[in-house]
Amino acid sequence: MTEPVNTIRDCREFIINELTGLYPSREIKSLSNIILIKLTGLPLSSLLSDPGKHVSEPVWIKINEICDHLKVFMPIQYILGETEFLGHTLRVSDSVLIPRPETEELADLVIRENQESHLRILDVGTGSGAIAISLALGMNSADIRAIDISSEIIGIAEVNSRINGAGVTFIQDNILEPTSNHLIYDIIVSNPPYVREMEKSRMSPNILNYEPHIALFVPDDDPLLFYRAIMEFSEQRLSPGGKLYFEINEELGSEVYDLA
Image (cartoon, rainbow, N blue to C red; front, side, top):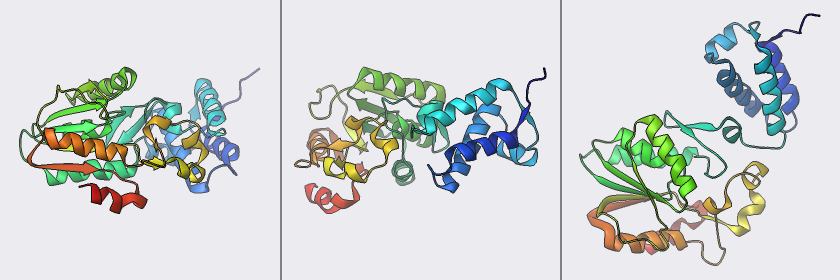
């Protein structure tokens, strides 16, 4: 008996049918493109111009598995094990936060505003290494160092630095209790945890159920603890005229400003 043959069109229709009612239509379209590009290895232009192209049985099976994960709101980045950040491919797992567009804006701002050579830069709470790696690849001979609290997280960041040829130095350290083994830095940048526990009710299941809470949430009674710790650290480790860059909770902007 001949095995059924599935096409790009069949795959796209299957993804749409499986996810309709769970995700907005625009997001479903984006997800189908991401899945098909990843699994077929074809560019989007080929997928769109040849929807009748056959796909292999392993690809069809994998699409079914991915949809099963998406139906329980697992982020596509964790399902595929990678994400894109400022044009760089990064490996991710549920040990690290998925980098957001706002974090891309932060990294891009640091690059655009600091084109001097040989700057010494520290990324606090590096996670996947997204900011540090982007700075290393976008700046002129900068000495980039990055810290996070767990060896597992540092391991992921080191892999990302290696596959992107970034040459970042990663250090296991806790900014709340930092070691003394640090340089004097020209720039300190951070996207620290800043979401208050009270804000959990506003968050979607794909974040609450899968992303690491340690990288997201802070106590309601002390939401600025990481900003305060970084600023205290900077008093000893930021060069004269040095710069601090933060991603912040938009509801706490004035409070962060008052710490400076």
